Image (cartoon, helix red, strand yellow):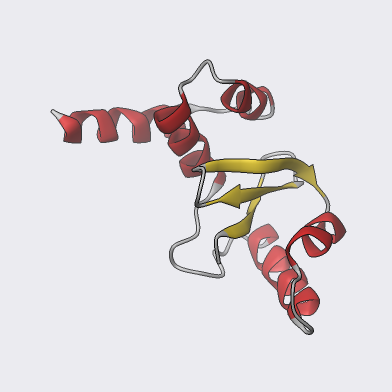
Length: 110
């Protein structure tokens, strides 16, 4: 799946794209997620279930990211000053983990 939901700190969802390494939509409801991502019969209920798991603090798939990692990834690939990173930062009350991840990634580059 190249797109999947990520729970935002405000309780809404973003749609993450593994192609562009950033969200393609922010502030989505569960029904927005279903509308954008349900491409096959039966996917709607699966997506609703995944959104519920995210709200309960669980990642439905091992390769999916939590918000802090998604924000760090966006900042890493597109820059902290990019429009999408700025939109994400605006709804992130605590960026401690995000900047910890970024520092780790930059250290690994050296």
